[in-house]
Image (tube, rainbow, N blue to C red):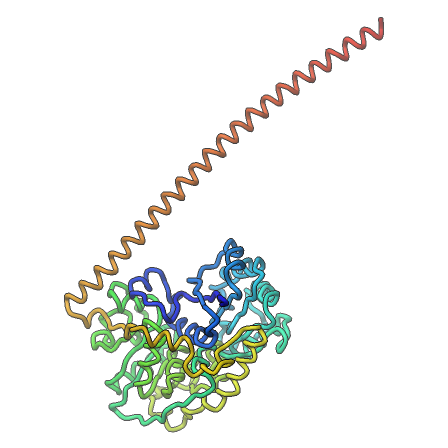
Length: 472
């Protein structure tokens, strides 16, 4: 039995309470992380492979333990080549340099404005170089999310086709090469899943809000950790710089009980199967719909989204296309919602080839690939459904949520306080040892100095006596 360590906060089969997921950040800040992790678990978890989440821990001191207990380290990444992830890149580089097992980066991208010139470079070029070199010492090839990232690594001196190759987002391969998207028959009674990013331009946010105004059977699927907390206990809020995004639970999305927050990948995918159309500016909000077989319209706003949309042939429009007060009905008849099906088989086979080049086994080597081990385990588990907002609950249900959350929060704070106290005690003990050592060192230095002086005087006296004798 092989054991793979994987960068993720939670395994698809783990049952965790929402308060535990929030307080321990088991989603890595964004619930979208669960989707591409789910795909990797499903593809790589054979009868002879166990996959263990690392809980997003990065510590070079773990190298010995990782080398001893694991056969490979799987690193699925999103737009990790960005300014805010540089410190983590440095930590990973130090860790990888101490590992002796294979390290496989499955999907990584660069974050950049949509018209950024790659040849102008980025402030984090050196950190990316060091990271890639460290990975390539432990693997045959790195899988990048799209051609923009491939061009970036080539600009840094790495060879496409040898050091790196475009594999897209692993989440698209959750169910293999077969991708069947149902026909779109949009009516006023259609169920629409909305997703949005507050970082989008104002006209994009207004476009998404307009969809909710015209199609009453909508659901908003947030993804950020702050929105998770806001949905669950209501005491979180986002900065209010736009009227076209739900900043608090007072927003109409929450007031109308139209918010659903995913707690696991499978329930999210199952939810999207019953939706007629997904619309929004969140990559994994739309990919989840696509792999569930639901038509999806992605609004592309930056390079990381553009390269993936192009590689997977996702149905998308650029944010510039929405200027001038455009409505959803202006695009429906002109777009091909079956477009992703046309490249799925080719992309999937390239992905499997990449996996095999890095020496990893997968379910498609076995006859049980249509009902793989992950599916078997999930079918024996009752997974929680999508989370409803706190203001849609009864007073007793609200009370139960708050008690669970505050109790766990108190326990975590108490544990941290105890750990800090123990750490402070250890530090104090170390300081005392240093003080004692310093005193001993000072004492020894004084003693040595005294002995040196005595020895010097003794030698001087001896020489004086010898001189007198010689004169005699």
